[in-house]
Picture 1 (cartoon, protein in one colour):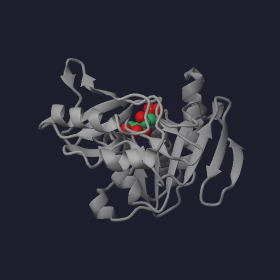
Picture 2: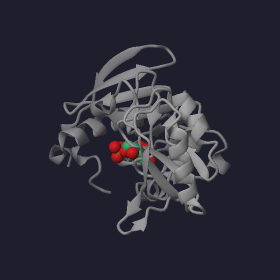
Picture 3: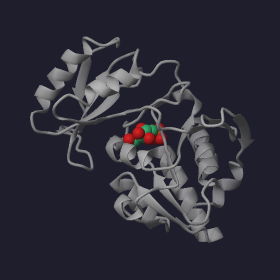
Length: 260
Ligand code: 5RP
């Protein structure tokens, strides 16, 4: 299976396996959304089935919940779990301080709530998502459908006063209809080019009426695992300041998910 993967998917797979192997018996784990997180969920399912790993998962989207159940992970709500030991999720961009842009998959709201209800957030990614300054990836902002055009106009007005390169935003579409989040909201993607002050931007965006949450994750991520196509994974731990490397067996992973 894994030998048919593209180099980017091999890198994502390596990071995902490394993160899933951090999970210990009895842990309550936030399960992210996206293609990298899906590898991690599959790996956890494999560990539950093959190693008897005991854990519960709190998914960050309906599609992650479905996958988690499918692979044999016990799924509970955040309200039932109350607090999590660890959340593992992907990202669209990360900077040297491990500030993130998330929401490319449209799940930023649940992802942010789950990550901030965790002792630790670990991001799994390939190397291409590392940037000096956030903003090349369009920043997702979740808005309620009521009056979304007014919210969009206000956001663009406010952006003109901030340290960003671009101010245009677009409604995310799903075919010829607006994309709808799991919470029934819309997503505006902000083409900012470069974000000068992510902390200020995040605070200001969340003041705009109609904005539910934005995709900037600041001071939330504790560790990033950067996968490479050859199976190498670089681990950067913000808490300890330590950087280390390990290697994941990619070829040997071929049989891992055969029974899914
Ligand atoms: C979903 C997200 C994802 O984590 C992000 O888009 C990365 O996705 P992928 O792992 O598929 O590259 O934020 O809302």
